[in-house]
Length: 234
Image 1: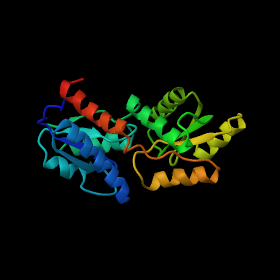
Image 2: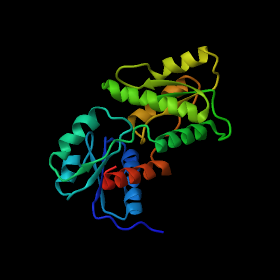
Image 3: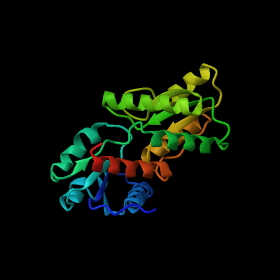
C-alpha cells in the first residue's frame, strides 16, 4: 500500500563532493526517499559544490531537513544550523549516526567486499573521513562496536584525516593480535576523495575496502524514517 502524500518537502543536507558519481549517489538517495514519501525534495550542500543548503532552504517552505552525515561533526553542528537560519519554519532531524540501518548497510558492504556473504572476516577496521570534534569520533567508535557485534568479529576504528589512528595502524594492530583476514570497512557515504583513499590504503595492506553506503536500500529507508519521526515529533 502506498504512503499518503506529504505536504512538507524533504531537503537532504549533504557535505558535497567534486565527484559527479558521488553527487549522483546523494541525489538518487534523496529522490528515492522522496518518492517513497510522495513529497517534493531537494539536495543542498554545505561544502565543495552547489547548490548550497542556504540556497535550497531560501526557496523552501517548512521543509524537513535530513542531514546526510554519518556523524555529528562540525558540519552538522555548525554549517547545517547556520544555513537553517534562513528557514525558521524548517525542522531538522538528527544525522544518520548509529542507526540500525547504517549498521546493516555497513555489514552488507563488508560481506560484499569479502566475496562470500557467509564468511565474514576475522576483523574489521571501521574507517571514517575524520573529525576534529571529539564526540563525532566517539560516534564512529560506537558504530565500530555495533558492526563488530553484527558480524561477530574483532574491530578497530580509524580515520583518514584529523586526530586518531590511520587504517594502516589499526590493520597492523589487529594482525599482530592474530586476526589474519582484516577488512577496511568504509564508513563513508558516496564515491569521492576519501573512498579512494580508503581503497588505496587497503590495497597497500594487501586487503580490501568495502564500498560506500549510498545505494543500499537501508540508507534510503533511514532518510524516510528520519523524515517520519520529524513529522510526529519523535
